[in-house]
Amino acid sequence: MMRLMACVGLILGLVLAMDRTLASGLERLLLDSSDRFVAVYRPGPPVDVAILGNSRADNHFPADAVAEAACGRALNLGMGGAPTVVSAALWDDYLERHGAPRLLILEPTSVVDDPRDLADAPMLSAWSERVDALVHEADATLWASNHAFRLLTFNSNQTIRTALGLLREDAADRTLTGRIGTSYRAMVERAPPETWQPHARNLAALDHIVESAREHGTTVVVVITPLYRPFIAKLANYGPFFDALKARLPADVPVIDLREAVADDAHFADPLHVNRDGVRVILDRLKVELAGHGGCGGPVVAGVGTMTP
Figure 1 (cartoon, one colour):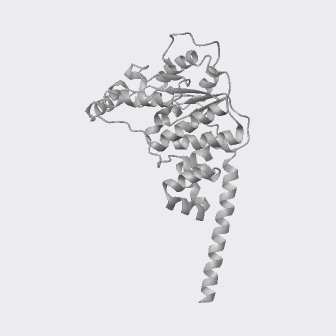
Figure 2 (cartoon, one colour; figure 1 turned 180 degrees about the vertical axis):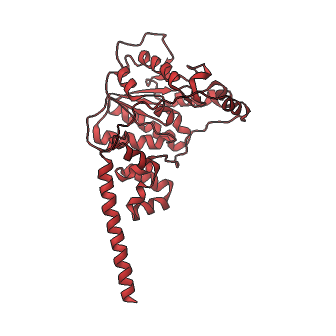
Figure 3 (cartoon, rainbow, N blue to C red; figure 1 turned 180 degrees about the horizontal axis):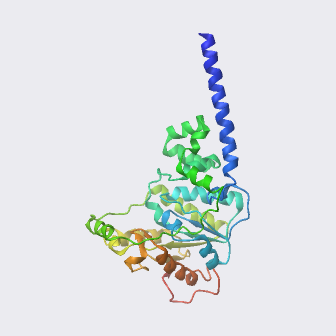
């Protein structure tokens, strides 16, 4: 019996040693990826502009185009499906490793995303104690498994995408193509009314990001990107939701409200995302409205656009 237990212990020890060795090697290998999220955790030159939010930041702010509008290097850390608590962790990790950017562009609608749904962030726990804490809070069983066997941390589609970044440059332009189809439009029209409810943890994370940026001397600009107008009609609390979101921000934080800036259905890929043509509308407005707020050129002309205050 003792011999059997010794053999089991030896095998387990070998498995754990192999797991730790392979996981450590994979961590070092993936740090060389061009993936934009991994860029937070490897040495490199700081950026001038950081972009935070969910897919509405990811797909609406091509890093190269924003860099041109803001006259500096840009890093888009918008993550599809990610709640604001993930954005806060990425922001803090970036500040800790690279210092404060000159400008932060924040798309705030991720406050409605479930803070327990961490999207593609869990893989980043290999380098981030903050993301690791979010994983623990969201799913203690998954967290324990990842710590028992470190390779499980990389058991995700994000690992595959990150590995591809070793072979090619991460796409700077992640704008969507295609147009919202007839069947999709009909589905939106048939859908019942809905409400957007912000999560308290996300609101606290939003407050933290804004306060932290301002403390570090970063100019914060909040940009609310377009929504498909028939979808807007289905949002029962459309006005109150965005009014409350704006009221929560410090009075001197500018808000570029582009919710209804795109009227043409052909410029939408789906109800929450514009396509490449719609992104051009966003960028044209940004070039004007960012002036004097970390962008290029002189101060914003009074009365131009919808920037508040």
